[in-house]
Length: 228
Image (cartoon, rainbow, N blue to C red; front, side, top):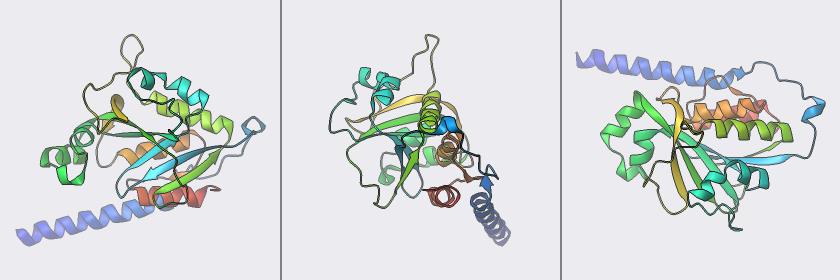
């Protein structure tokens, strides 16, 4: 029985690895879209922050970004501070995100819900100046139209109440410069944070792998299928 279980696990792990490789190797969309004249204009930079399992989309604190996310100011985040270089947005599983600030605090319950099904939350964190050449950072230069589309996509990920306001998760943060909010959608290991990041990038007209559950495959596909 133990040998059968081990064999089944090995087969599932191999299938998952093959699926991840194929997901990165197949571009989505398959053909690159042609840039229209309306997409012309000064390029605007965003960053992708990546660690071994998670990615965030970082937007600059430009006037239009600050106006779109004015609720962060109202919730006590000092987004107007000159020291703020980037505002990072991440989508993830509620239990795992809220209860696992560090790997040392990983518990079985949140890990199980991350592998099965959990409500989603948005995490917003302020960052200072970031060297785009450092490990775990990918810089992408977008046209004004692309930038607006990704800004709109990130904004649309926040859950709204009946009055149209975002829904903060009171009393939950990792520190002074981050906040959690209710988010649209459900999270699991197959449709996780990196799939959300890939979807947001595609909304801006970029190409990613067909399925990118891990940061490594997502970053590889973005760099491979787009002029970075």
